[in-house]
Image (cartoon, rainbow, N blue to C red; front, top):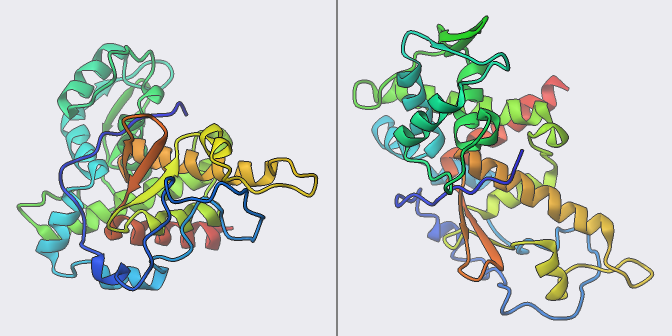
Length: 293
């Protein structure tokens, strides 16, 4: 999938400053050593300390009203609800099973998406729409029948936050789980997620108060002397690939609306911010994926 840029929403997720208060501040590019590190097994591009998987449950609101408010701020959830409204009782599709470009532009405007002045030729080029579409289709809230998409029954009711917060929480959580699960099934080479352990370790760092800061490209990391060397003294290609797969996964999840992505003004760094609510469901999807084998 092409690299999609997802603008940051103003709303932030749960305050995890207490969870992170005992951990050292992650090393930034300005603080990093210029000496190339040697491979240690730990991802060289991630801070050494941070949130643990078991800490996530303590960082979310269990009250249905509070949980609904938090999940309603997730761009994927908002876009999925709007996409359902847009489809209404049915919409025609192209032979490729997608919304046509004209309708795509209309939907992008309704969702407030910034397409950077580009005119996408196909829906699959717009991750901000592909994400909610895939989640809704996976949960049978949308059903493609011939050359038309129509509403489906849905695995749980597509509830409205203001009318039934508890039902909305179930709907929103299902959307996140299904999108991550389908992306893992699709695989990185087909536009989904590589989904390796490094990706999920990186996701834990996105909920730090300052988010997760990464070099914007491997070229930047090489120029800063961050990439471990192989026995011959050259940049280790396996370590470069580790970074590339994680960065690509995080960009995919940002385009799909599960993370916020910010690029520094000089284009040298990218910062990813996540929420505990999303991470809990992402880990749930990973467990399901592993169980399904």
